[in-house]
Image (cartoon, rainbow, N blue to C red):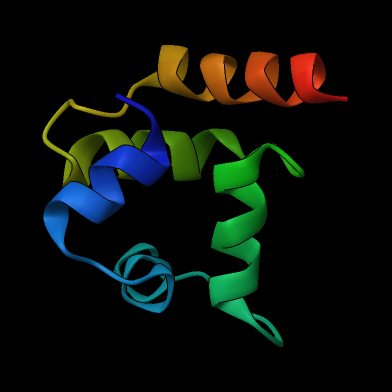
Length: 74
């Protein structure tokens, strides 16, 4: 399952996911948005945390799929 699909199915906002993950900085929800769209690749610790909070629905393979979709769109 793609990260965005999981987030929407879970009824969470980007800001809520960013908070669950402990993302910090000027705009954590924008960081999550960049991860979802493949604009940025999350760090390994974030990938592991997302897999944990999604109960295995979002895996490392999911992030590869995000990157592949972005490359095809470019």
